Image 1 (cartoon, rainbow, N blue to C red):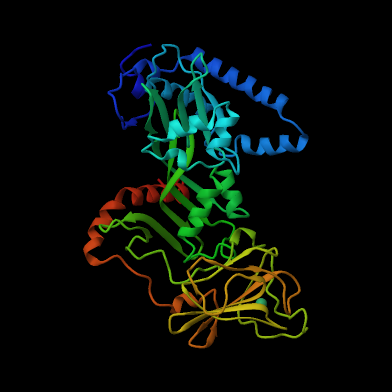
Image 2: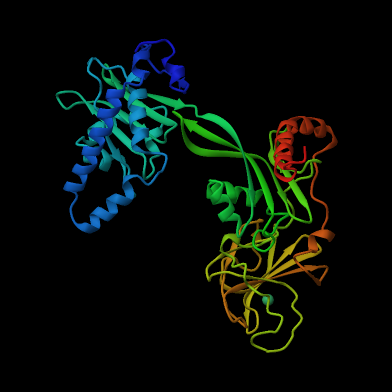
Length: 463
Ligand SMILES: [Zn+2]
């Protein structure tokens, strides 16, 4: 029970910031007692069942169900493991372990409402927060837990604010004042490499490999300047992702950063590496140190909603003639967010019978992008916009048969094919010469991991 390795065995590190009086170390409080966990789980279950019994009208039930565990980080496991952590931290005159009553923060809540709900007064709110240097309780968000522990006389002896499975602040009454302490748990970081081959869609491939949508979106944003994820992906494209995962108590709690990725089609291969330079600026670069952040996005809309089966209307459906098609069409549901392809200024925002609601954006001297048939415009003429900023939504206004974004790219006033225009765009920023050696050094290990994955994939049986 009291083995000296309890802390380490628990897979965590505490960053203690003691305030006020010296604390007693109590390593036993950190150990996992199976019985306690079991009882914790059981009492939680009972609490949940009781709360089901005592909530009022059906509409209220739905309301509560929504606010019960909206944050996936805050689960019953979180609560119980925090019980174990908290116990070692809180020093109270009583020897008995604290019994926590945790209350979920709801939308529109404030401390007074929460304390009252737990059976405490505004006076208690004042006492708990008056000495608070951490200010944790000043920032509460729906889904977080506020826990209360009282003595036998129902006087408040401790309050805990569980922000996430990684951070809580405990307020404990020592003599007559509440002292606060932030307790942080460090997740264990592991690296994972995943290889995907696209069969039908990027998301399905990611799903099959058990990747979260977040990682796929992150991948798309890293490569969004070089790959049009709405139109480029083809069956057989190979993707490798090296990324970090965060674990707590042996359970995965979140994805970390993508460290490196490669995207290989039948015609080309793109590699990207995460690198933090000596100015402490983090970005993604190809193997030669050229930034992946380009002046223009390849697909200026939420690609996840684009239907790939869309056939650009060579024969114009309304004019029934073969009109020169000078842009790219992305068919997507009405309301799909449309992004500014690059930094610039809105030079036109209007409506015409053929274009419908349209926006023209000027980027520097020579480049202009057009966005037609919008449902809604979200910017006005003269506005400055940033790359990726939502400027409107997909619609079917003007001469359009169905909702789609018609996107045009002009260089010095001449229409260019947005799909191939990158070949004549100015080169993206590279790392300075002074940084290259450091960069090469930093990416050596991820580079090798990508390389070995590529080899094991494509050269199967070659040896
Ligand atoms: Zn079009």
